Amino acid sequence: MGTRGKQRLGKVIVIRIDLHTHSTCSDGTDSPADLVRQAAAAGLAVIGLTDHDTMDGWAEAGRAARELGVLVLPGVEISARHEGRSVHLLGYLVDPVDPALLAEITRTKQSRQTRLERMVAKLTDAGLPITVGDVRSRTTPGSTPGRPHIADALVAAGVVAHRDDAFAEWLADDSPFYVRYHAPEARRAVEVVRHAGGVPVLAHPFRAGRSGGGLGEKAIEDLTDVGLAGIEAAHPDHDVDATARACSLADRLGLLVTGSSDYHGRGKRARLGEHLTDPDSFFRIRERGQGSEVFG
Ligand code: AMP
Ligand code: ZN
Ligand code: FE
Ligand code: FE
Image 1 (cartoon, rainbow, N blue to C red):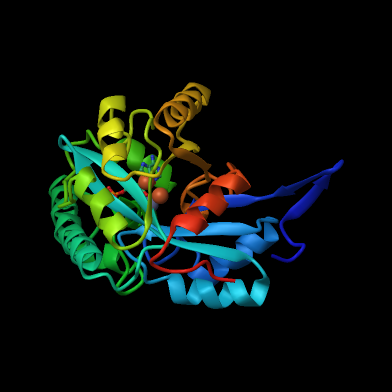
Image 2 (image 1 turned 90 degrees about the vertical axis):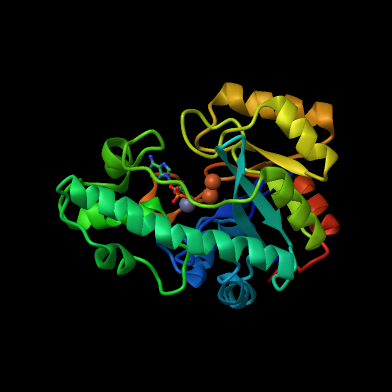
């Protein structure tokens, strides 16, 4: 690691680590290389690249990491479910060609395509002036499509001013326009990440009123029994109570904790490095991950 990303605070050296970010390979707005550039500019020493259901950004981010002296922890944010509710699982340092992992995320990506068409059809039926082509033109070819791309088409059509407004008015989980897509059971997702040599960390477990926060403490205990390694405690969608709850649960279950911005570029209000991971957690993830290596 170079001097970049370290700040002297008296005698303490702080290493800034943000382990959950998105690029244009899913629903972020920065290319993988731009994301690493932004990380360098934000004074981060390490970022985790965790696009939804894809590892396609790894190679480009890895090249940028070597050029810029930032470390990139390669990962993937797997869309999963528990009792019908959405759960997001971060898988770090997985083997990017593991067949079982690829089969799961490929199935989810395909289902997300059909779901995009069905959501657009519902919105069109309600009189909104967008087409599937409009939405697809807002994604990078081959990337994982998601509601943020539909939001971008609604912004471009002048229906709303910002992605956030599109979610609030049209795309929320409980909206009549919401359509589900296939996702593996959370337990299966943990097992697949472990089998691929990766380190499974539960993303934003206690996120209020949004998708991705659908697990109770008993369910997290059950996931720990099949190999869950950590939980994200500091996250923009966690209030102080949620962060504290995640930390004490991690303590009780022997899980590591992470903190991150879940940066999506211009699409969301979170800034890179808004929440950080303790270096000790990063080093433990790096030690445990067998499927690939940190880039940089
Ligand atoms: P999807 O997986 O397609 O259902 O979409 C989930 C994505 O939408 C996640 O990346 C979330 O971060 C993003 N998202 C959820 N709610 C909002 C919101 N209110 N504003 C902006 N992005 C959101
Ligand atoms: Zn996203
Ligand atoms: Fe998420
Ligand atoms: Fe995310």
